[in-house]
Length: 258
Image 1 (cartoon, rainbow, N blue to C red):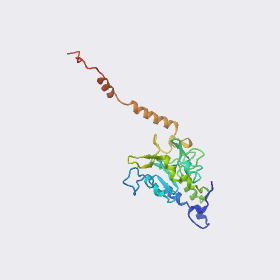
Image 2 (cartoon, one colour):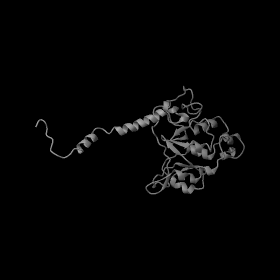
Image 3 (spheres, helix red, strand yellow):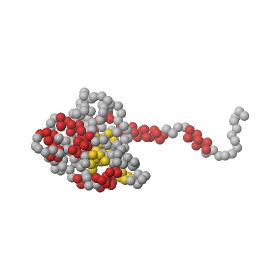
Image 4 (tube, helix red, strand yellow):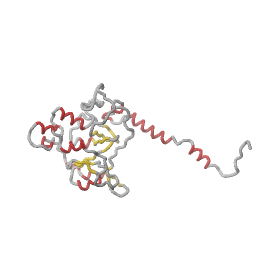
């Protein structure tokens, strides 16, 4: 994979400022609002904007995809109300080293932006260099924006982590294996990741130490227990109804006191 030169940032010249500038696609990816309804297709079902066009630097909905057929397209997914991208896709665009990944639905993902937290974890042993979120070793950033913002703040050369990507890796055809039909027969990408158990508590909770192994086994077990409990908690009324309905019709049962 060839690393992109400073010209990938969209600016000419050879000044140091150009070296720090974010490429247009990266700036747009981190600033864009995903999963909002598409204004062009507001009357269509499943019109959430969950695909990012790397050429137009904007989010589009599944119904917009034919218009961007010849453009490189990146699918954005959502987990616990936050935008994530599969690590396999993102690392073709940018060096993702030292960014803590999470394993969700058997796929490693990285958060695009930092997430709000209820309290600071500055006293922790290992925290994000940008937002102080607790992390596992050896990671230093909790999201792609935290790494980029830190490098920009330090005046570091972003061209050292930006890759010149192959557009065939982000071709329109990639969505054929991720599509599902709605009631109107329209084909849309299925991009909502299953959320077995939402994060709870502060950012210093044990859930934030999932790290590269993804959702902890305790979390998975808790989710399974909740599902099992829901199945069992049918109450006693259905049982009574069942027993009454299974009685054979015959002579009426008299009360002992009558």
